[in-house]
Length: 158
Image (cartoon, rainbow, N blue to C red; front, side, top):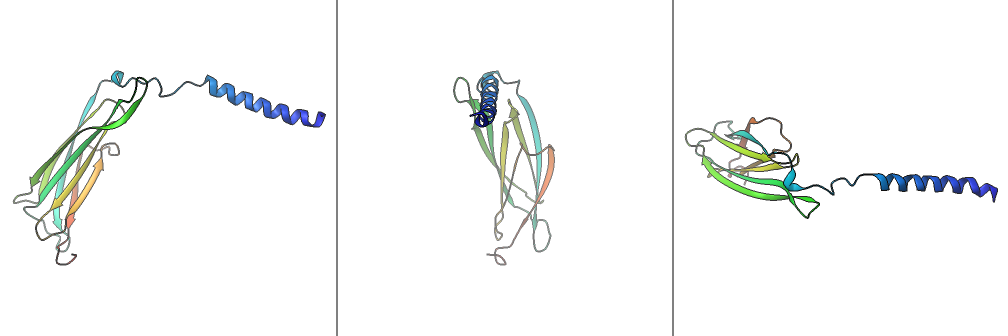
């Protein structure tokens, strides 16, 4: 009996320790009120899309650049919990005209550190395969950046 006493007491003390630790820990995230989050902040991003021909490395004129934006934010899921949900979406189309550049502004409004915008670009021009690019404001630090999109001619890469 004596040889079982010490291991049993050791296991019991570990179990009691963890039960007390779990019982005394705060309930993280269960008392969040989505309506009482910090004052919203707004950040504006300027994105320049440059459209080029992959083969010739020449600027492509009159390319269509479509932008789609989805704003993801914290919303109330219940009285004590929040969830992430798409709260708005928008899209617009620009033509590069005589140049090869389209400039877009993306506005992000955050009321929690986890709110962000997903931005998608679709670039097309007759005779070329479609090009795409996307980014998230959650993973970018810069508010101004440029992206060169290379399109491939359809007859070469169908």
